[in-house]
Amino acid sequence: MQSGFMQRLRRGLLLALLGAALPATAAAEATGNEESQSEQGSEAGGSQASAPISSLSSADHERYLAELKRLYPRQSSRKALLEHCNRLLESYSLRAGYRVGETQASDLLYQLSILGEGRLNVREEIRSADGSRMEVHNRPLELYGVDPFVRYDCPTRGPSCQVLSPKDGSPLFTLVRDHAGMEELAKAFSYLIRDLQRG
Image (cartoon, rainbow, N blue to C red; front, top):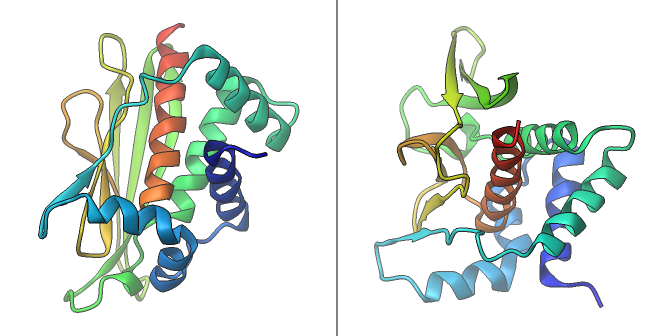
């Protein structure tokens, strides 16, 4: 019988491979009981913050990497983790269509790239809904000495979640609100950071 972990991994990968996030209503249905149960545990008006993944055993880590390498064949573990993170970032990108009621709502798009040992670049693209304006910001992220366990925050209301920087806890990515998707991204990103910290 498949574990809940493997089911979430396969669902996240399926969404990533499709290359587009589900609409908010469909995403809510897809996560169904899992999300509603976690929301019941939070206070009204509060937010859901992730738990660190430090409790995962090395066996879980190896199973996770083996699954990724089946999905991204002929790639090293590091490249498979990087590609998986980028596909999840694309799938759960916060598009203008989700930001109902915001004036001049824009698309937020992110991509990770490896700068060298222990360093990542976070590329943020802010694009107007009509495509007339675009801003690009590149933020280097030094990984040596930081806690590799990535956290995220999903308010109980609103269209977005934030994945927090492992360096200082500031918002690193603002993505469409999907608790299961953020859990999967935080896990993959944590493993990528750990891999880069090992050199």
